[in-house]
Length: 467
Image (cartoon, rainbow, N blue to C red; front, side, top):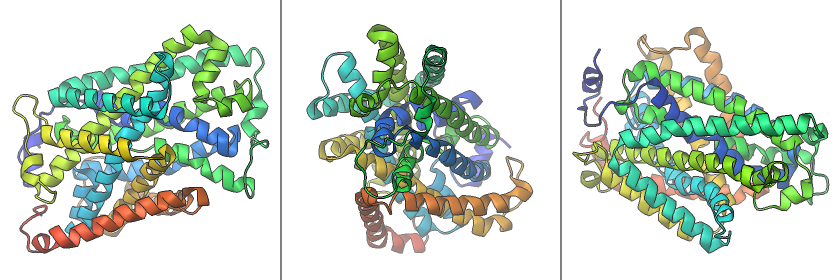
């Protein structure tokens, strides 16, 4: 079946250019995950809450998210169109729940773009001598958002070329640090006890279990977004085959490389108190062993990787807005479903992501709050999607794309159990109560908007997907 015929089956015409092959689809998912971004942004939080031993939450989260990726790979093969969970849930459950899934995805993507760029800002500020004051960091983030928007407006081909290159910089940077720091430390004075160091000198309330659970934020924030490959399905060649492969491979490689990196960095910490109190512990460790000049060479690769992460998330966010606007279930749909003639991209949707990203920067009082919200929102979205699929999957016809076969049922149940646990981890501890409140408010707003603006016309079949 041709790509156009696939879209005709879903009552859409081909408006976006199909230029992404398997590697580019993988690069989209891998760059959205961006272990560089997640680890550099959150490693200091882990040290400050649970000590280096908190890195053992990483493999736990990786396994949980690999289960989600397997389910999403099946869905991506069955429904290879832009809009991912909005489209999937709308078709396997109902339009109302599908819209609500789209709303959660929208909130997540609007918050995560500036959050990612906040991982880049202190590195740029220190490297170029701008400083790391609150105003300086906000300025760096806003300038970065503007540059990312301009690149995305120019066209998906330029954005994906930059993103493809960033995969190499991320892998080279992370593996390079693993090899060099690992060699220096392992053949020198590796402190293996750091792997079980709970940071006992840190002030904390209650048992260590509570502190350890908080450290799961790093993995939960980082190993998400693999479904971005599915969100760009309409720009992917042979999407039914390539997108599922990209989703699974991105999670596997990110989990493995990220955990090895965390082990090496942790055993290399020369002074735990100094690392914990530094502006960013990883550059502190790199500069200790490599000197400032050599460390900065690696940090340039890190900057490129984080920039590409924000770039591709902005692209993914704009495709979600485009997909919902195309079905007239988004405010200003006529404006945001327009595709530019030159770059074949939803320019107005990109500008909306830029504007909302700047607003988030200007009004966000806490980076931890932003990070937490962008960890719990996708977990909620994943749970809705997987539960909807669990209810419907037995009634779906056979597929010629990726399938779990007899493993679908146990994988689905394990995934649901994991997601319930993860949402509890990200909302129940007192440190995350504000995160839970923010997520709850955003979902409540979504429910209100649905009933006020969309439900009546959606039930009448005037707007929404055409089944």
